[in-house]
Image (tube, rainbow, N blue to C red; front, side, top):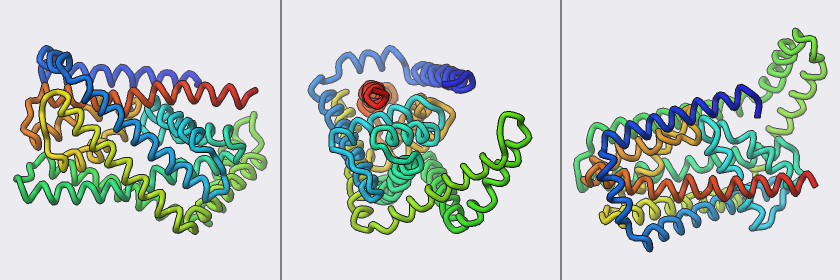
Length: 337
């Protein structure tokens, strides 16, 4: 990690702490802490259990995608690798966008595959996760609308999520459609800029980038031509989202409140839109987004909602950070040896 990355992580961490401090002050920190202290330990454990099931499901999803790229990982190794990828996402700004390069390097080291192959694998997992998430948002909000009025806050959240995901999908589609132009023009442009620096040879940089881009797009084509594996990956993605929704439902039960299981179905993917912020794994922003969504839709007091969200985030954020940090370190050491 260089100096600029450390500064970005420190700034993002300070911003996350500031957002959480404001959130706690607004909802009432004393009442929130009191609710947390009276949480049912068995239901807190159930929350973490569902979160672990989510982590396992998406690690199997990564294993399935990598299998289409002729990269073979055991179930245990794929779990450790994906946990390491989640760790990277959770400690770098902009969520997946910040952690994917680290995750790709980890996959490459463990499997002995090319870096581009690892990047395609983890990026494919992130892209495929969009399909079930959007489906759950529309299905959940649609069903919720039949039982209660959809508030302006929820309408705005759905609109922002749809707009952001549409922009991402459109960008991916354009990049794929004009991939030949990207391969032909981007390397020369970057090589020209690098050539202005005395430390780089323009021809070497251009050839290296062109080769990596060709490998990258070839690997994407291999994933796209495996319909059986794609279907299995989407199914595992859906199960992961459902496990997260179950974890949030259990977290509410742990703090003494029952909520309709329909609400977590759309609240979980909607709140994660806040992960696309310059905060480590969306820390602070995602918690605030959950509270903003869940207070009006559940009718539960803000302090209790915040307590439930903290229990939930303990399972889906802090537990993977602990497991992933340890696994990334162990796998890295094993690779070096």
